[in-house]
Image 1 (cartoon, rainbow, N blue to C red):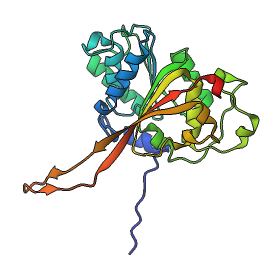
Image 2 (image 1 turned 30 degrees about the vertical axis):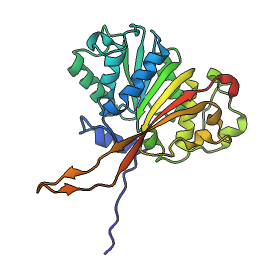
Image 3 (image 1 turned 120 degrees about the vertical axis):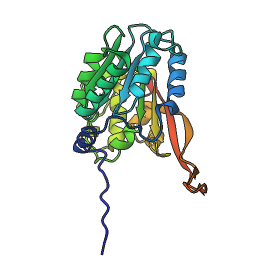
Image 4 (image 1 turned 90 degrees about the vertical axis):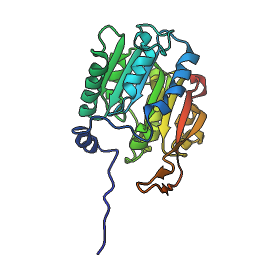
Length: 272
């Protein structure tokens, strides 16, 4: 008798809608504390009082609330105090249920959602729909982002089929796309990297937690248009799992699992 294992389609909207209908809290790959030191260091290095942050695939993680603590430090003695009320956080997700959960968790922790704390926004967004994505960024931010943060969102996108770009208007946001590229299929993670470049200020950063050591290798391929837009600056290895104690006192050995925290830098437009 054969056994068929059905693998979840992490690129499917229906998968996430069904999952988040009942899931209230879950941390993909690693707890938020794994990525937060890198995020905080980047915020402090940029030293901006108008930081604009885009959180991709907010899901049911507590990362959004940690980011609010970081950018609006009146709620946290460890916050970055150079940040003012002009800062913006835009949390986006594929699934409406995830966005509603994020808003609810924010109210539960802070007693409000956005009111009096600057701009903490929530929006249902398909990152591969450029027109919709751009409209949401313009509506809630109105300027280019300085920092993008994600926990395994690009991993999920990479499970999908190839897509076609755009359409971009001519020289939109400094992104130059030759006409022949519109008829060419791109892997979804490649397409979204181009869209993210269009909404990110040169010098800005994209900090991503991934399970893959090869997730952003396309940025090293000069044939890929995104390679002129982004540069991988740092890859930090993070161990997951490890040996645990069994119920009978014996040690249970697990294979070593490594995850990766990428810091990717938005390149100057002159190189595109």
